Length: 487
Image (cartoon, rainbow, N blue to C red):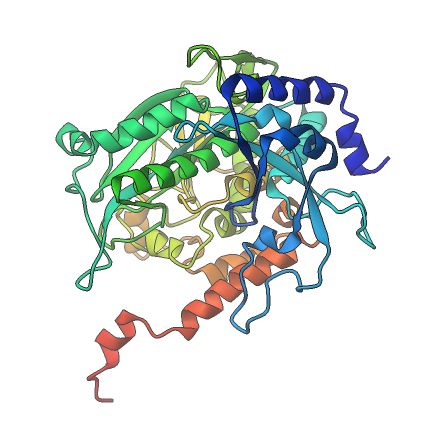
């Protein structure tokens, strides 16, 4: 059996496909977005009339493999990853991810798992190496089989609501940079309430929100969950924000650092490893429910294996070893979590709540990893441009190494690590440029397994080209610094 045939032969699939048909008919869906995720986390795909659902659920959607790299070309004009005559790929819909779009109820979306095509000369019907969403499902399953543990994640996707610019400025702020001020939060209430409504309609169990430290910076949080569902929700959240921005004539900004001297758009990952537990549907909307049960499901129960009941704050052995794995592979993890040139504006703007060095601490926000509660860790070297699927894969690989080798993370850092760096004390800094982070990833054989097959080479090509385009470009800083400079 091929990977594709095994996938199609899942005994639960036929019933799920039939349930989607009932949803299509009950909700009046005319067309469906067949979505897959590129290596950077961008949503790609096509729309197909709903009347063809059964055929594409069985045969898949054919599309060009270059979509995996956003159909972008490198500095020399070569399509990244794949030549123009590369084989097609096959995107097969996961019926349990079907959900109506609340802003256009004639449309629905479904996530897809991606395969090499049936006619591929080398690897027919095999899983596509660079399908980050499919990789997370498979890597998480392997981790569960090896350790009996599941990863649950809660993400904090900070973003900015800005006004489009003109000939005087590229953008304008919408609020003042006052964190937690209800007055500032209220100024954008029409906007974030629209996001809230759409999110709930697509299965988000919203738990809190606030105004953060930069102009127009809003953070809305939803309940933590299984790694794959949380990654799907982060991706969907971005789609929702983009739609709301169109409706209000604003820009939904996930760029890490538009403003220097102010906190950036982080996307802290709050992580924990669990044994046992079940999934249950959370009732968020009235019938008919606009999506499949899986879309509205959350993990609950079980034992959090990071928690040591004999300690107030220090984690149990599983947690300590996981911390050790994360610290051992931190520089390579940064290459995934801080994935753009601009990401390192955040990591270099010390004192703005961004981590600067290899450290972990108890409630210490200056560290790369904060034990934010006795039963969870907050990974801070990640911003809102992250591909969440790839980030979870990389974290799982670091946990696996830490647990297998019982890596000791050392004692927690109690000082403000920014002050430690400023004092001149010798410390290990995290990478300060995308190039340095990519070099660290290249040297880390453990984290590279989160990018299997040819995926690593494609990712490295894409991101090094991004760096090369950056250093090739004359910026405003260059002009301001050197235009009238005499040697």
